[in-house]
Length: 219
Ligand SMILES: [Zn+2]
Image (cartoon, helix red, strand yellow):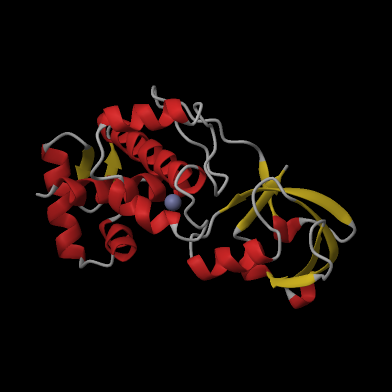
C-alpha cells in the first residue's frame, strides 16, 4: 500500500474522529474519501494489521496512539508547509492548501525542522489553524462561529475552515483574514445572512450563514 494512501486515510480518520468523538464507521470513511465501503473496509483491516487503527467489524475504526501520532505529524507537516509557501515563497493564500496536500507526503522530518526553525516555530498557519509542536501538542484557541455574532458587535477573525480557493479569494478581497477586525453591521437569523464591515474596506458586504459558519472568530 502506498504510504500516501495510508497517510490520507489516517488524516481523514483523525478529522472525522475529532469532529464526533466516536468510532468512525466504514460508511462515514467511504463517504469522506469518495471510495466504496468495500475499499474502506479493506483499508481499515490493513491499518489495523499495522497497528495504526483499532478496527472492529460493524463498529468501525478508531485511531490507535500510533495512528494519532501519525495524524498530528501530518497536520504539523501540512500547516508548516502552508506557512512556508505563504510567507517565504510568496504563494497566494488560496493556493497553499492544494500544494501542501501533495508536499506533506513527500518531505522529510529534517526538511520540516528546517522550515519550522526558519519561520520561528509558528503556532498557527495562514488559515488560522493551530500547528502541532514536534511533540504533538497543539494550542486550539476558543472560537465562536461568525454567524453567532449579534448586530453591532466587533470581532476578530481567528480561523477559516474552508479551503476552497474561490472562497478564500473572496474573503481576501474583502479584508477578511485571520487577525483582521470586523464589525457585524447586521445579523438577520430569519434571512440567514450577516452584513460585515472591515476596517480596511469602505463598502459593507453580506455573507450567507452557510459561508459565515466557515469563519471562526475569537471567543
Ligand atoms: Zn491546508
